[in-house]
Image 1 (cartoon, rainbow, N blue to C red):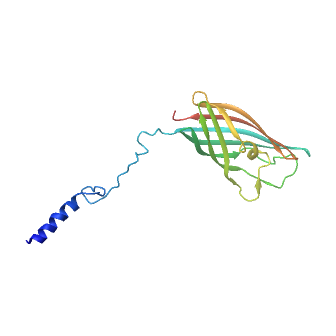
Image 2: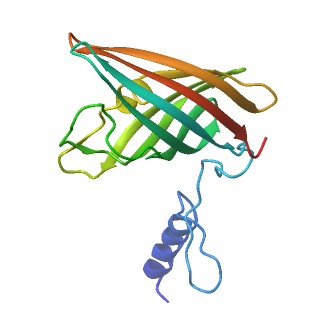
Image 3: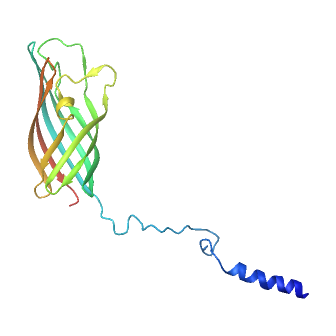
Amino acid sequence: MSRRILFGLVLLIPACTTGPRGPARPAGGSSTSPSSAPSASIGAPRPDRWAGTIVSRTSHDLYVGGRCESDWRTTLRFRVRNGNVSGSGDAIRTSTGNPCPFPVAQLQIRMFRLEVAGTLEGDRLNLRLRARSYAPAAGADDLGGFRVTTLGTVLHLRVRHDTVIQRVSLRAPDQDRGSFASANALRLRCRSC
């Protein structure tokens, strides 16, 4: 071998064995990418799972006379992680027939699909329920005021022994036409605490 080739090989060997390297490849041909971030499942606390119900009686008092009423049962499922609440629920109208003491041609909403959000700070659970969708979706309304009261405000609740058992009364104005009200009985419990 000539000296020139031998000298070139001597220069190439250190260049091939030093410097930055890519990820190591295990035997068998498959490759993995190392992660510098710790795995989310290692050391991260699991979220607490909550579930429960809200039974609501809602009303819409009209200045022109009459009261429209509806009853609802809401089931909730949510998780609490680092004090933040996220989950879902369904609200089903349990009252039937005409909600008002006068003839109404308006279709009534019979179900809401809900998004649950809020915070848990010590023994204070603050929940907000928002309607994601409702059925029937075309041309229906909520004449009893469930959407305006129970779904329209933050519910401030007290937690005792990983449980909420509380009654909450809510009111909301209806501009110059009257007022809405709802009486809500809540029973929520942490299933994993």
